[in-house]
Image (cartoon, rainbow, N blue to C red; front, side, top):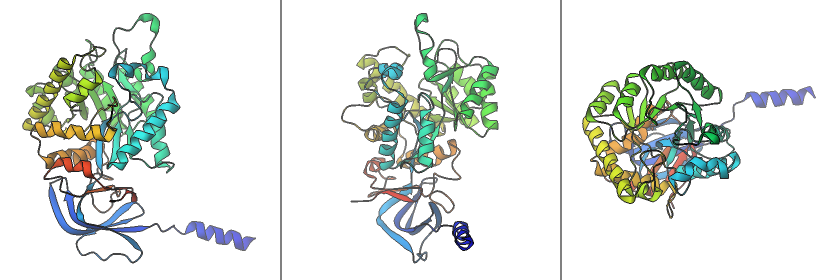
Length: 422
């Protein structure tokens, strides 16, 4: 009996050796500087990149993946998602809890996450509207290996002044928005709300600064930033207009989400302070199909929606020219007919192109900048030794034509091959 116990203990003490994969990378893109290296070898072991370079000796036990005719890049990142949320029109978003329970929404999130992963989006930042911390549960399930999926970072409940992002609600309805939001007014309530989100598993903090006439003060933003940063978490803030944006920037938030109506002066302040703009630059067609945008609860005509699209495009163009650090995020919550979440994601590329952003800069936003914003750049966002093996490939060069991302046909997540070229 002792002999068997000793054998078992020795077996448990010996580390399990995982699979080694060697990728023949014909064209390896470094999105941080927009360069390409030819004929590289990428060695992946136990989910981590262990070596990258030309002419490397391939370990004898390796599975060899031949991508010698492909263009290889780090896995892509969407820094503004709501993976557990989706409806045919914007107006239904406020009533999700009436027809979907937590299990329903978790299944929606699982499908959405896996759809994005299969297309090469290997990391998502979920910024709230996930009910009872459903995205946290999805993250835990994927981290445990129960399901394949992207890396998920989630904000938990969105922190906002009383009322969340609702307006014109009957008093008799009660505070139904608290399914999605934490009401917090004043620095102390905000500090408590940040700590509550951290307790329930948030990876970042999301606030709404200006959903009503009364917006968060500089002192309130600083309170959220102080607590979040002390815990190593970044702060993202939904803001549209100049005055509240100034408080957000000066208060030390890491990113402004949306910022559709910001002036050049405020964009220059963002550049000065290093605040990232995750512009969620909606294609006008998406706004028209969703039937809502702008003031919360206000139904838009197609003409008004297209006017909003023009404002978003103009703001992106000005932000790029000024030199604001741009993160890529979508904010897709309306499921358009005959389009997947991935199809809709790639539609945003046309907006960036129309704003004059070169392909290399778009790819940098979707990898390097987003990884820095999410505070995961020491783990992901590049193809280098010591980083997680999140690797995608396409049959042509996205630095020439960013629309090539639609043709991604190889996806590796944490060293596991999710998709291979046909």
